[in-house]
Image (cartoon, rainbow, N blue to C red; front, top):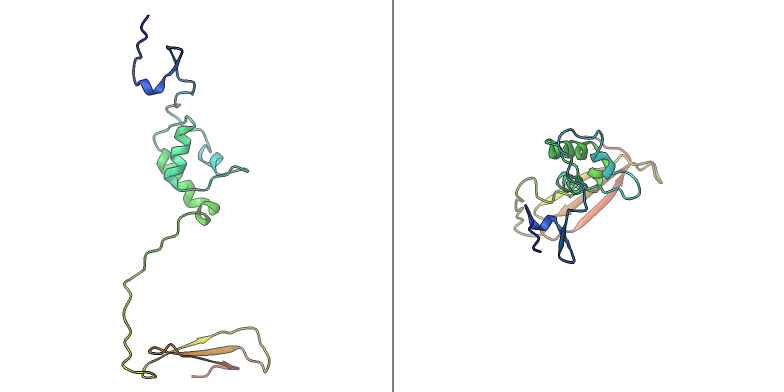
Length: 147
């Protein structure tokens, strides 16, 4: 007796030569279950990932609706833990520019930090100066800043 598979044979199981129907449920087409994408980010097995991964997990669970990717993307944008555990963007805002200094102590960079909580001597601010050629750093505490 020859068994013939109708459709995609990878969706069927073979048991001692006899073909069986797939053991998993078919994807439910049509309306979306309310809050389906939220179930995958809650609880002890919560999975905070990107929208594409979440949509794939919902599809593998057997659910489908036409706007699945857009709904998962909206959920990821609103979910704070998804944002926290999401990928970091590592590209620069703009290209880096070279700062050339012809000899030591010819060009300095200066920054004022503070206000901090008052320390010994009512010091609240700090001025930091860096030489661009040698990378020499000088830092001094200040009580006030005047122009």
